[in-house]
Amino acid sequence: IKLCRDIIKRRHIARERVLAHSDIAPARKKDPGEKFPWAKLAAAGVGFWVDPAPISEGRTLSANDRGAPVEDLQKQLIKYGYGLEVTRLYDDATRLVVTAFQRHFRPERVDGLADPSTLETLRNLLKTLRAHH
Image (cartoon, rainbow, N blue to C red; front, side, top):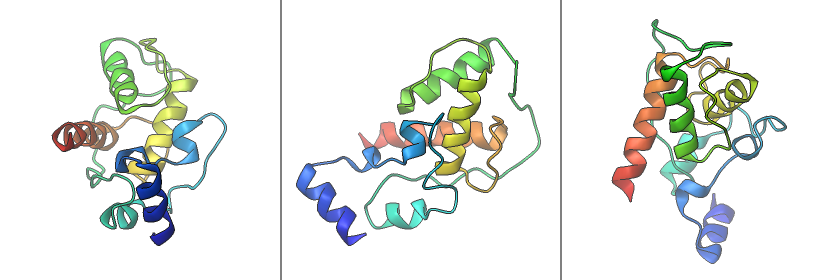
């Protein structure tokens, strides 16, 4: 934490720009993984965190789903900063980005499925970031 704070200060890095390898390259990287203490780091001023929404049953987007709900998801992930195209299809690229998002922000279940918890956590993250700026 001390080293990260020093680097952030010297390089003038916004806390929300402290990311994982898997956030930058979700198709190639899995680190630092779902056990990385993002909440602890964010509490110390390193990185950005919102508490994950509880896991619950409900509409889940997954492989080959298509249409407006998938488009909404893709646009939200892009808004956060993930490299993804809006295809309106829950394709492999979308699954990999959802998996990276879950590793970082909803580590309790990392399965690449956009379940209600994942969707709510993403909405809360974007809302919190908007309020932060």
